[in-house]
Image (cartoon, rainbow, N blue to C red; front, side):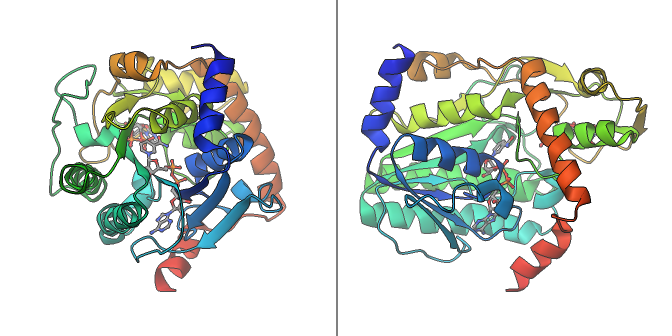
Length: 346
Ligand code: NAD
Ligand code: UDP
């Protein structure tokens, strides 16, 4: 399919439709809202600003086809929509472990509420699942057929098991209620609009490099991850949602280019021209040692593969963080933990 054929197909699927994006003020959610608006959709973003930021969607709020609703998806939601992208959930280990009970709730109760809404509306629903369902994998690269290796009682379990249970719910609604579902297993994705204090490796290393602070490599830095640029990821997500009904996934979407954390640190130091040194810090418990997606299925079913190289994607992300740091110095951002405490209490 050529890119103009694909665009026509996507416009046909999304134009004039009311599309709900949960987690719409987050990193991935805000990029998705932007692309859906460009395809002619009417977008309703739902977010409780747990980790989301108003500045991610500030450029969208004056668009008459965009609505933002402050809502916690662990509570039911009754609105009229034609399709649902379920992205609401903190994704950085620091953030999802801050209030692990809430993380499980958003994954499980949130999934039930969104699946019930889809059931009532008889509409499609896509789940933003994760490579974390594979845990600390013993098969490499990870194909969708691998059942994973997850510690069910460790500090990452709130996220890993929450997302696994969400997948279970999606497939039970599909089997039991014939609901048209799409499950996408997202591998590490980075890009503009990650928080300065997101805590994930790409944002940490870039912020440290730009500030001339030591780059914090956890453990020996030989653990690996494979990094996908946000535009590629959103392209894969739009394609998956537009597939025929019998395609349910799960489908891996990610960039198979694999790096050790030490290599990533060196690349970011080089791209920023920073004088930062690399220091080591303790490895967090249950940190997966190796991760790389097998993307054969995405290639065959979605006609998808990543196009943005890691050095190009990092260069764009570094530019974003340079600007974000400059505006942060002017006091536009507040402590994430304070913000999260407020949203949990309210
Ligand atoms: P993010 O933290 O930037 O975005 C999550 C959004 O969900 C935020 O805007 C947050 O405020 C919102 N949210 C959290 N709890 C909510 C609740 N109870 N009700 C309503 N909104 C709530 O993270 P992200 O990287 O954009 O991730 C988006 C989704 O993609 C998540 O579901 C995540 O698990 C999944 N994912 C992301 C990656 C990645 O590398 N970025 C990898 C795998 C999976
Ligand atoms: N990491 C690191 N330094 C940091 C943040 C993370 O070395 O400042 C490591 C972390 O231990 C893990 C990898 O980078 O091995 C990816 O971590 P991240 O939190 O980005 O995502 P994960 O894939 O673990 O969910």
